[in-house]
Amino acid sequence: GAGVSQTPSNKVTEKGKYVELRCDPISGHTALYWYRQSLGQGPEFLIYFQGTGAADDSGLPNDRFFAVRPEGSVSTLKIQRTERGDSAVYLCASSPGGLAGTDTQYFGPGTRLTVL
Amino acid sequence: GQQVMQIPQYQHVQEGEDFTTYCNSSTTLSNIQWYKQRPGGHPVFLIQLVKSGEVKKQKRLTFQFGEAKKNSSLHITATQTTDVGTYFCAGYLSSGTYKYIFGTGTRLKVLA
Image (cartoon, rainbow over all chains, first blue to last red; front, side, top):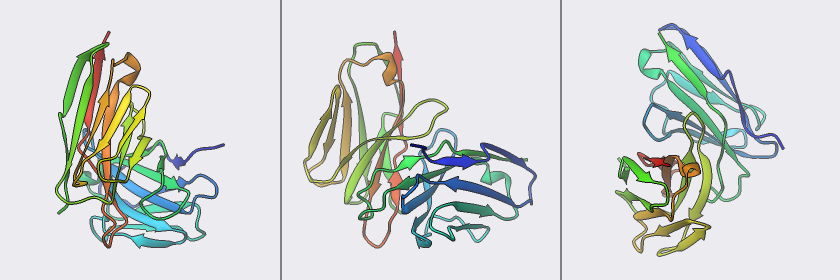
């Protein structure tokens, strides 16, 4: 079946602009994670959804970052007033959603965000 | 804050040699997962370890979880060029948080 998809694959924007990054999880997966990965680093946790609700948003770096998952499937990560330091690959992962912390995470290909 | 460190950061081996990467957490983990990321690709799940002292094998790969559940290792026997990539461990804390903390990664290069 189809894996996790993310759009766009690349996004170039100017400092101060607003961007939205989309994640389509594997059908039926109730758990969804957003990560940010900088060059040469491991993925950094941003937020975890179980269904429609954000069960843990402790990784969001500041209030410019916000994520939604209104119907429990597709999720959008929103970044306001982008800064050059936001440049990174944003990864989405979904899992079947059993007991938290016990599931395989299936990662999407990521969105490479470049802020000029 | 919680940290997960991996050593070495880089490893170059000759094809056929063995390879080991070590993962160390500053806090006790509920479980640990291992992922492989090929150059230009995304992380792909390899395995999950849950029990203290657990050892799991997948063909040439052997994974261990320490007795104190604060460290883990991945050992590859007789590396092949297809093993090239970055190996990450990801620790799950479970105490009031749902987040996985990924290690810094070990980048493996295999020379034919």
